[in-house]
Amino acid sequence: MRFFSKQILVDQHGKATNFKLHSLEFPHMRALHFAWFSFMVAFMSWYAIPPIVVHIAKDLDIAPVEIYDANMVSVAITILARLVIGPLCERFGPRRVMCSVLLLGAIPCGMTGLISNGTGLIVIRAIIGILGGAFVPCQFWTTQMFAPSVVATANSLSAGWGNMGAGVTYLLMPAIYDGIAVRTGDAIAWRVTFVVPAGICIVVAIMDYLFATDTPHGDWLVLRQQELEKNQRGSDIDDTTRNSSNSIASIETPEQKLEKGFIVTTGTAHEVHAKGTSDDESIADVRRSQSIGETLVTFGKVFCKPAVLIMIIHYACSLGVELAIDNVIGEVFREHFNLDPSTAAYIGSIFGLLNLFSRLCGGLLSDALAKRFHLSGRILAHLSLMCLEGLFLIGFSFGLSTNLPSAVVLMVFFSFFVQAVCGSTFGIVPFIDPLNNGKVMGMVGAGGNIGGIIFNLMFRQFQPNFESAFLCLGCIALGAGIAGNLLLRVQDKTIWHLFDGRYA
Image 1 (cartoon, one colour):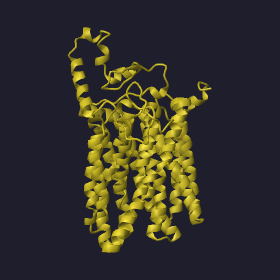
Image 2 (cartoon, rainbow, N blue to C red):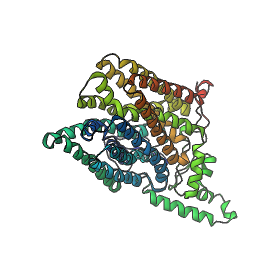
Image 3 (cartoon, one colour):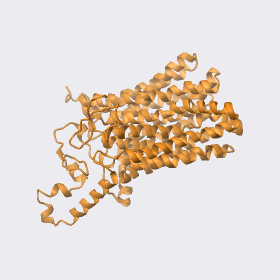
Image 4 (spheres, rainbow, N blue to C red):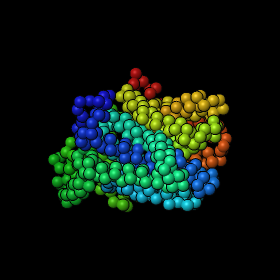
């Protein structure tokens, strides 16, 4: 796979089959770069408080239990945000939804300096939690722009670089705070610091709206209007015309076309028969014209699919673990190795910054094995990475009892696999129910936040005994990875198909 190609190659639906990372070429590469950068800015602002919360707690006399409660509500509110944002992406497109999330989240982020007690901290972190919903339009955007053969790489790259926001905030916020504190004092410095991430969110939202588009074929709402008009024309055709060979392609629904084995891209004239192609090509475009009632009914049906439930659990064991550790990693090193807050924060930033390549590696492995084993290969990649995640989390639980260099090395390994599993998860998600991708992505994304709440509670109960907390995390991830992947079925493919001789 070439990341620095001279030109973008597209399939028959206009989706890119390669990358040109060094450019902002419209529309594919611009959408990719805007997607990951928007999510990174959102993530940075979402987690702007933990790196300097020790200064806030000291100034306002906030109890540790209130800090943990604030950590949990910031993750909890994102569950609702992601569930709502998924269908909104299907209706209004990823670009407008991303802009809205950034603008709405920037307001409470900039107002963080107005809090005066622990309750205020909890409330403001809950409202800021809407920024965590930016993950859904990020993934939805790249899924619209890139072909099935590289969609896992595109999704993992955009989400992984976006998740770097957790590491960036651990570098940026203490630096901003220290720079301001030299001139104003601690009490004013932390209050002013939050204006910076809020302002960045606003600027990026404006850039998204003005300089990018939703799909290779143009603006989402224009395509949605075309789909509505096409459906209306189709409903006016009588039964005789409906059955004629030259008109059926223009009036069939995406579901009907998918059942007949067609690859569907709404809003384009291209149509290719998918029978005899690889499993990874069996991906259709979402429906843009569902009514609210249809959306609610479909939402329930999608949620009940076993593959969706398994992916929710697996994302809880990957992103959920990451979110929980983002909140405490600085404290873990500060408490165990008697480090000052800034030094502990800088070490903790390594955990988030590894998203530069770790999540991408999960997507690359998923796409690589898919070329040989199709969807069964994606499941194999996912299983392997989850097992390694669990084993290294268990190893880190013992490494905390050794020395600082050993603990840092083990943190690098377990964080790599935690984030790689996020990438392999979204190497599978676009194939579970392509016609309802927004809903599936919203549900699975929300699953990550549910895991974040559960594991934040775990850290709260175990602290300061972090060794036991990481041991439990490792065992849970290992068990869920083995059991879930052995049961997972996507488009009638399981990991067991690797052993039936068809890929020999």
